[in-house]
Image (cartoon, rainbow, N blue to C red; front, side, top):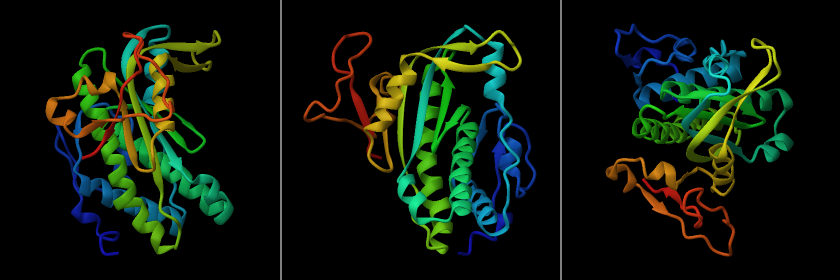
Length: 271
């Protein structure tokens, strides 16, 4: 695979000048909340370098600066409009049965951290890793239209990174392709802290969007992006044209709108 060993081709641009990329470029960018413009080729090449290194040389990610934890602790018991993004790895049970434990751990942890990097690079926060799922959120209190656009761009970039960045490396080892299910919803969430210790007590988010985004994701097919109507309504018409409302059959979707009481509309990304 010719692109893997060609790091000098990748560049990342933002509102300040950037130097040539290096093996830990995304590691350094993770957690920075400045707006960045990242082209697909850059993300693919950087992903390939890290996945290749992880499988072949034991490359370890330097970790995500926990900006989400800082944000949540600063705003305990505050309420925010936000878009919640659930990304769940498909077929991990089968992988558990087929792959050596050490390789499985590398693949799943690398997948989670690559998805986290995409969230950060699109202006979102990484809430947590739950098994083989990643939960991110985009604060929308000030500009819900921008948050919706960033969340959708993030979801599409995740599929690109997996299909063109991660899977070609896994294929060289005869490992199965990774696939994901992605769901997103918009709503108000409250920051909660479980305990009185301001520095160490667990902090989290609670709200309808957290629950509905999870339910939406569970109904997605492999490599499918599903969004709730409250996200769809905040997209530009040109972006809305890339989505199609799902017509549910056999009552498999029973959740109702928090505003109208009618069955909550869900849309699939069709490109």
